[in-house]
Length: 109
Image (cartoon, rainbow, N blue to C red):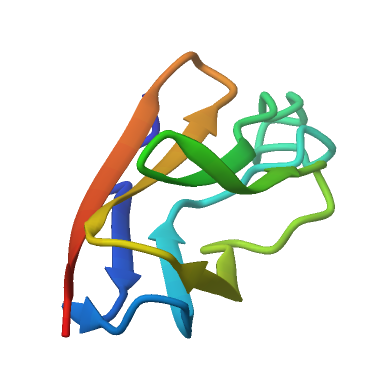
């Protein structure tokens, strides 16, 4: 498990049915590509967040596969239509099998 990994999400607390909202996510992660070497010349093992998903009430909004060229602390900003009150489930998947999750509830305005 990578150390210091922390997901952050900015989502509205409420929206009217049918509103398009902007969602912002950032996860603190070193994102080691597996191509660098340490001071002894040994390859540093790959350790990246390889997938990010967002679901609203179980329906997929976004599903992103990431490759080693992704930057440290990946940031995503995207829009989603909110049809009803419910929960946004954000999930990040790490190469080492770790899963980081964050949930934000959206009420009807």
